[in-house]
Length: 275
Image (cartoon, rainbow, N blue to C red; front, side):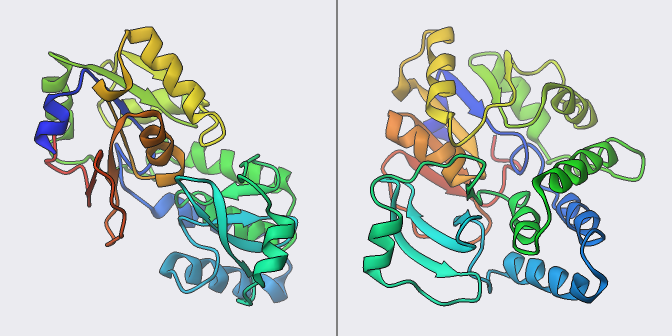
């Protein structure tokens, strides 16, 4: 990994799950939405979410949740072709049905097809299945973001991260590309004591839908070729696969063992002391 970073001129970092790795706020988000379902569904709501986190439910990180069909969709992130579809209750679709419903490349639209790239989307998928409205999820999401900047919530600072970024900044351009809104990003960076370290902040990135577009903008702005840049994040769908397809190198933060083989990819469990 050291060689990959040493050779790069530009490092593009994700925020959630990358510069901090806490997950308690996902549970908080889910609890807020659980309160909005009928009493007789509350336990099933939470149990479903817990099974998603454990990986024992069809909907899981790395899958795509189809709100319309209430299905878990497995997509090859490098080709965007659907390889498997499973109902919310665990029944696999026949190949012919898959071809009819999901012909061609899958396009994530944030309305129907939701890429479950990180822990934020598991509560969301649970809420959609149990009949909540998108306005409910948005209100609970905003409430969670507000909670994250109160004294009740403390972000865990990744050991060695700040010093490592400061050293890298002496020779490389550091950019943050995140789906979060700018004010939330500023508050989180302040909490993590990372304010002022990045050369540029690209917020509301609409990843994965606009990942390639945003990364190309960053490359152009800093006059860097794709092979001279590294995308660093915990979401394979959002920031790793698109980067590799563009010719960038990538560092995928994934604590669980995963089988992905690519000459320009390195997988690490955490950023702790990695920089």
